[in-house]
Image (cartoon, rainbow, N blue to C red; front, side, top):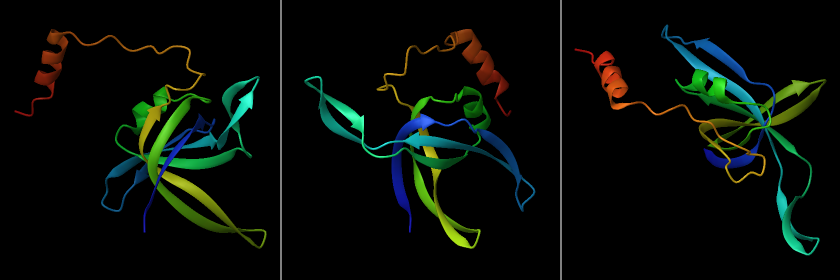
Length: 143
């Protein structure tokens, strides 16, 4: 059974990029990170409707298996507001004689949450000129 989940929150500080050796001799790259997420409820604050946190912050561990994991690792910053989509995984382990349940997300997509008030600016690399695009296409030609 698979449970799809969408979580909005802020990135934690532990970004770990790992290369995993597979049984077929190939390697895969995984990016592990955490997200702090809150539930919100609408409430009147100073006469205006606002969303306020309802309950404690929940930390979710995430894993992103993708060939672009290294590039994503270079872009992520602690506290960055994001939205992740993926599959929820439940894991259990023993600690001090007690069974501990954890929740993890196998991330399929990650987006910058542009609705967040924490976004002050976004800087993009310059777009490629048509000459650069043509040269890149020539370099990728397998023939």
